[in-house]
Structure formats: C-alpha cells, structure tokens
Amino acid sequence: MSAPQRLTAQRAEIVFAGIVFAVAVLLAACFAVGGSATAGTLGERTKAIVSRDGAVVQTIDLSNTDEFDTLLFEDDRDSNLIELDGGRIRVADADCPDRTCVRTGWIERPGQIIACVPHGLTIIIEREGEGTPNGPDAVVGAA
Image: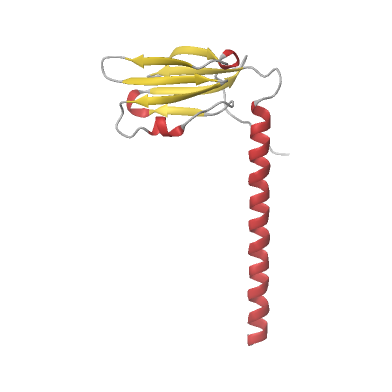
C-alpha cells in the first residue's frame, strides 16, 4: 500500500471512529433523558421493597415520602441506616466493611437496586401494583 493510500485509510478510520463515538454519546444522552423523564411521570406510584436475607421486611410507598425520614434496620450482627426524601431512598450508613451500599447513593426509578451483601439487605424500586415476577424476565421468540 502506497503512502497516499495509507493516509486515506487512516483518515477513513478516524472518521469512522468519530461517527461511532458521536452515536454512542447520542444514545447515552437519549437513555439518560428517557430514564429521568419516566421517573417523575404524573400519577406513577413507586414503592421500595426492603428485604433482609431474602425476606421482605418493609414495603415503603415512595410516592408519599415528600418529607425527610430515616429508618434503622439492625439486629445482633449489623445495622443499616436508611433515608427517605422526596420519593427516593438510600442507605445513608452501614457498618459493613466495604460500604458499597452507602456509595450507591439515592435510587428512585423502578428497576434500581441497592444491595448490602454482608448484611443480606436489598432495596428494590418497583412500580405500584407490580410484584416480583415468578416467571422469566423476558420471552424471546423466533419471527
């Protein structure tokens, strides 16, 4: 391959990489806007399902959490401090070694999860009226 052909091929690769990057940024922006738009949809009621060791401990209607509130989940082995504010929930403090649950931050949209694996604590956001499905998450069929 001659020098001018190599230069043309390199330019084509750079242009292609730029297009791929631009499409990726556009898709990320669309998903970010789409996700936040569905979170505050008028009339959408969400709930937080708090479980410890697989058993539901509490169900919280996030649609009614306009005021700041705290909940403490503790037993003889550990504790998690949960905060509620404006339709969102987070683990504010935990005495687990890695504190990943604390670093997760606030969640508010259906499908978001916080997990404190050492304590067996999970918080899952669901739409009101939806339960945990017993069947498959998705069905794929041949056309």
